[in-house]
Length: 225
Image 1 (tube, rainbow, N blue to C red):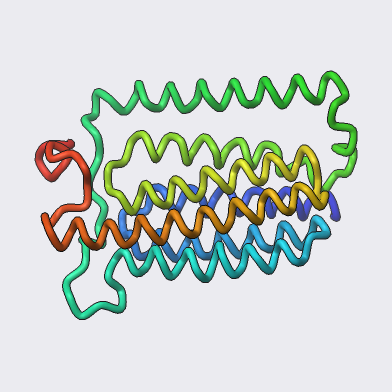
Image 2 (cartoon, rainbow, N blue to C red; image 1 turned 120 degrees about the vertical axis):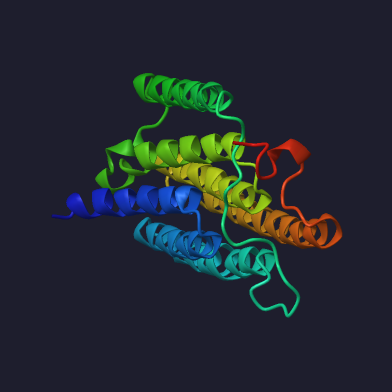
């Protein structure tokens, strides 16, 4: 039973990440990300890093979640960006970008396998950390795919945060909750939050000035499908 719980936890992380990146209702996608960050906090707690779990809950769920909802104009009296994401790159570009994301994930997986095969990482005998490796790899792949496929800037912010979380999971799965690993992840959480806050402000500003939420004009309705 104890070995089953980490598998369920990892599956929930991947499932919530997928919802963040495919749900067309951006408000629901942002709420799913908040749930994802809380599950990440629980993962750090299970790994014996309660302070990192607290930092994840604050910077990942609360602060980053508020920044994402601010980008949608949730609390603003002024009309915010559209809450429904219907922006996609041209369909002929999607398979190529998906192949690039998968190829990148395969290269990362080969690197992890090489580390395990040469015995560099010996602490992986701890069963509760093993599911973090495939979960982190899957979330990284989803984040890279979404960042390359979607053009809505808020969706890209979600993909950016999920990509970083996948890297954190992979790092924790390989090295555990060592002090230096916790410090590195904590710095990453703060940087990701600041980047998300800046991105949210820029999205609101771009929409106020030009009434759009993408950087390329042909990706607007009628040009990106």
